[in-house]
Length: 287
Image 1 (cartoon, helix red, strand yellow):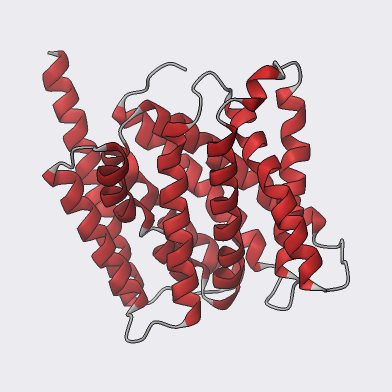
Image 2 (cartoon, rainbow, N blue to C red; image 1 turned 120 degrees about the vertical axis):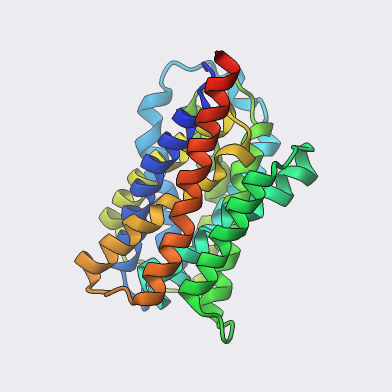
């Protein structure tokens, strides 16, 4: 896979996060009374069906490479997906997404611990200022169950993005996503059976739509985080918050208040600053 510039990797993440917002919006349409584990299983099942044609003709031998890392990411992804359904249906879309975007900040210490990445003062400043924007939005006078669930989602997103580095680089993006979803199906099916709810296949189409959007996001993450150091591009994840505000307003009638607007500015402005700084540094190196 060819290497991408930091600016291109960040641009891809911006596009990917917009797709992720539509995936979240579809999750919100199922309502709080839906069978959560069934819905998560439907998402993984439809993801496998969508990905299979893209993996046709791939060497069977390569499917066993890095299996333990695929399995680890699969179960982290499953854990996060369950809490994502809970938090999205219990909170306004933009508020839930604001907490999800604590993931780039969480990636900074995780990258330092797992990969010994050097943290620049600029990436740390952008991450901290962005997280302060998240706090302005949610106004955490008390941490309730929904906010806790959303923070768990953010941690799983951060962990999964960093673990991309452990995956075999010769595997295609489609193969990577297929293996991750396949490895998680036994656990998601087991949870759906344990849930004990009557099987309802009506959310299957919604699950397929949500899977399609999130697969695009996940594919872009694989490409971007394989191409550049996470601490240099992770702040681009914040961009989806603007999409969440817009979709929440148009689709669900969730009007953002002043705190939401101020917090969003605190999240987006450091992103723009960091992107321009990286572009300037790249120009100085190439000149």
